[in-house]
Image (cartoon, rainbow, N blue to C red; front, side, top):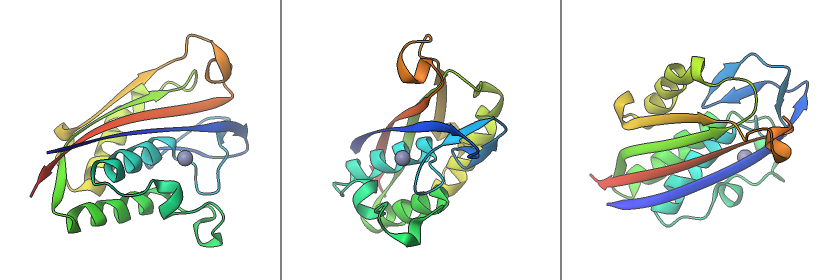
Length: 157
Ligand SMILES: [Zn+2]
């Protein structure tokens, strides 16, 4: 068994799509980022990379590389999933928190779980997503940022 933790935060700005866990969520703002800025997928990637002792997502997919401009973060997770598989591990379970004042993530929870679990090739009951606000405090509370945390447990195949 290996455990890993991931965290990510992005600025929220007008005119960018909000994509969370690979799911497009209708909202006036979206994360600023070189890729699509999918904060949840980035946290999940870092949790898995951490668990298998690899460098973080920023080292694997540098934001200075034009290849990753507006890249779908789902492709990052597919790549990370492959590296994990080659190292002989699979996801035992994944637990995540999305922290945002708006929008409400709850209505999209099942869709996000389906999206992430299908990329990882595991059943949806191995993935959990929780949503929190920041109680109107700080940048997240003012609606200027969105963050995510992920903890993953990997099993040897
Ligand atoms: Zn990110």
